[in-house]
Structure formats: structure tokens, C-alpha cells
Length: 314
Image (cartoon, rainbow, N blue to C red; front, side, top):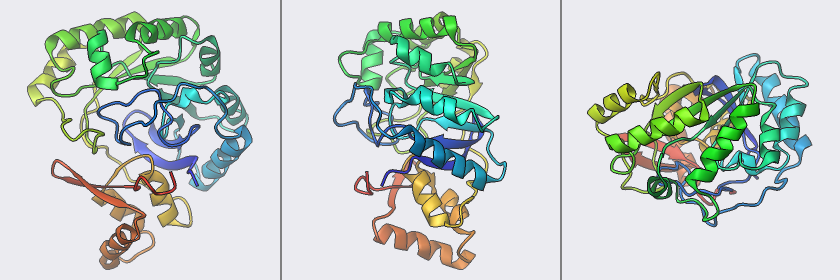
């Protein structure tokens, strides 16, 4: 069964963030080379109601009640492209009836050329689109989108969104070595961000196991140059800080819900399980979850991560 709500998790943009999945695993029109959830097969373009609004909203309500005030933002993101959910706007409106905190949307930004998607977006406080390319060739190498989607269509849609959206737009730039980290690429990204009128810009790099093993972060001097070249850009390239609190009575279920969306470092897994197991038994608990194929161990660089296996109910 898909986990529709997970967390809260520590977010470098949104503080303590309760994640929401409005679409099933890998329901996306992109297959980004850096995606921490792997490749998209097949690419999806249809907007429809994947989960009933009432089901998603009630899971959000229950998670907020159990979090005891530890949430800063309810963030629609999850395991695919959230704007493919045709009932996204209904979900946000229903949540706003009982939640006074922030509501954010993490999106690849590709669907705002559609008027109904822009209308659905009006209920959010913050929309954070990916703006990681300023030319068509780089856009296609990085995101491997469905043929219907182009950089021009994406940017035009974001420009249209900016004209009517009352909240803030926070652009996220994912820099990948050898694909979009040249000075020419960075300059074109700067112009794309300027054209959409973003209120903030965040620079990030692959820090978790990506879809393609050859993918890696740019060199430190390239990152410094990018920060200098993108006015006001905020550095989001370091490891995430903050604890993954186990808010539910079942920390294993909490852990598995997060791992389905968000690869966890070994220390983060241990931190969640420590609420249930003595310190000297945590390693055995992790090993058992791996042996039972409920978690999968992956290494990226020098860091060990745990994720939900592809067959783990998805």
C-alpha cells in the first residue's frame, strides 16, 4: 500500500516538513538522471485523480495531530510529479480548512502552461519549481522528459504562473557535473530564473543515490562560481541537518514511509529506530529489515543510505 503522507522530515527549505504523495510511485513526465527514486518507466502525462481527496486529506489531518505541533510546512511532493494529480487544488483547499501553517509544492514546473494547474496552485504559500537548465539540449540531457515537454513550454508556464500567483516562487537549481555546471550553462540558468521572477534561488547537488550511477556533484570551485553567478542564491549542497523524529507509535512504519520517498543515511535510520530499540540492538534491527527486504542498502560516495526496495509495495 502506498504511503500517502510521510514524516515530518527536516527540510533545508521548509523546516520540519510533512510530505504528501498525491500521485503513486514514479508517476512522472520526467526521468531525471539524478532522481533519488530511480528511473521513470513509463513516463506519464495524464492528469487524473490518483487518490481520493478525502483519503489524502484525512491522512494529513491524522499526521498533523500526531506530530504535536512539530510541523512548519505541509509539502506536496513525494514519489512523482504532484501536479499530475487533477485534484491537487481540492486537497490544498481542504487542508487549509484546518491547517494554519505553511503549504508548499515541490514540482518540476512542467505543467504550469495548463490553466487548471495554475488554478490549483493558488492555494499554496510557496511553489518550488526545478530550474536547472537554460537551453533545450541541457534540459533534455538532465531531465529526459516526455517528448511533449520542452524548456520553452516550461518557462512560459512559470512566467504565466508568476503573473497571478500571490505566494512565493523558490527556484531549485540541481547542478550535475558535466551536464549543467559549465559557466555557459550557469549563465543560461540565471536568465531562466530571472524570466520567471523567482523570489529565492536554492542551489543543490546530488547527495543521495541517483538514478544513474555516473552522476555526481560538481567540484567545489564550480559550486562557488555558481553561487557567485546566481544573485542571492542560497547554498543547499550540504548534508541535511535535524532529526527525523518518530512521531507515530510505530517507528518502523514511520521509517519505511520516509524511506519510500527519501533515502535515509545510516545515522538517520538509527536515530528513528532508537526510540524503540536499545542502542546496542539498533544495528540488528536494521539488518533484519534488510534481510526481510523491507529496506535496501545503497552506498553513494562514502555514505551508506537505506531506501525502500522497488518491490516494496510500489
